[in-house]
Length: 201
Length: 167
Image 1 (cartoon, chains in turn purple, orange):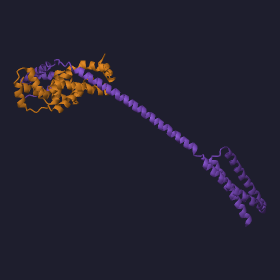
Image 2 (cartoon, helix red, strand yellow):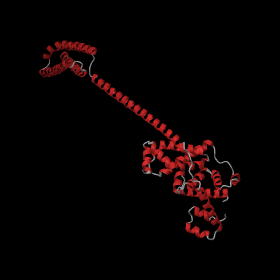
Image 3 (cartoon, chains in turn yellow, cyan):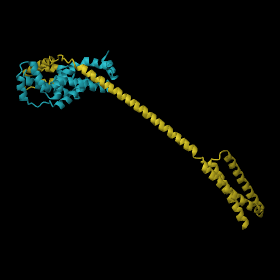
Image 4 (cartoon, one colour):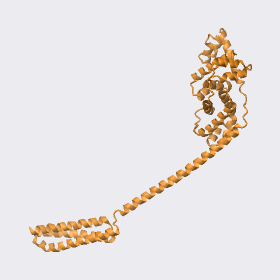
């Protein structure tokens, strides 16, 4: 076929009207069109029913199996996620509980530690009291102003010590109050040393 | 009940809805598969595989394209997979085809033999267009080709078939 008119028509480069006008004069394109019509008619005649009586039962059985497998898998996943969620929740709650326990326990002293601390405090306090007994008579050797200042300071420290002791009587294991008591005792010791230093020079 | 309703029921996993789809589409599907695979048993397998694949993938169908095109795209892929496995691809040369076709006096059988010897994609385009009356845009969607590509492929298929059959 030398003319490409039918190709142009088939590829929509020509309209139906253009092609109709063309085949009035082009024999090869007219024959091509007739052959094409024959071919398409013949192709349409192939549109017959194909019998496949066992196809749907096969497909249906397969689909039922697939659906059961999916449901099983969904159930498995659902249980898996439920158990995982419960585990995560349990671990989270126990971690929070332990954290809370630790927080509560951290400022508290254990029974044995408390006994040791109380004994050491007692010894320390006794030592300071002995020092105080030595220093108190020497206070009068200081001038009036210094004497009043140190007496006032010692009274303030004693009041702090008393306050700490009162608090410890209610909550003996509280390490924070014990540390305040220790600081007050150290302060008293330092003040008494200062007085000794002033009276000996 | 509209096709959209049926498809929505299929998306819920309703097997009866799949049966309804099968009733509508199994004949054209079998014919297309038969013309691509040239074997009734393989064609049935292709339709079977298509429905199983559809069962798993239909929940992702968003109605953005025609359901028919979606279904036949799955079918065409199933057919190509079977072809790859059975290695029933065309190996004969054109002269041999012509001799083979001339042996048949019945035009229908001649056409069947001629279709068999078209390249796969050309065969699919021709069968969808000439036997099943699909629109060019639908064929483009199924074969994932451009509209121009479909027109050109169809033209080439018709030229080859006329040549083989000497109508």
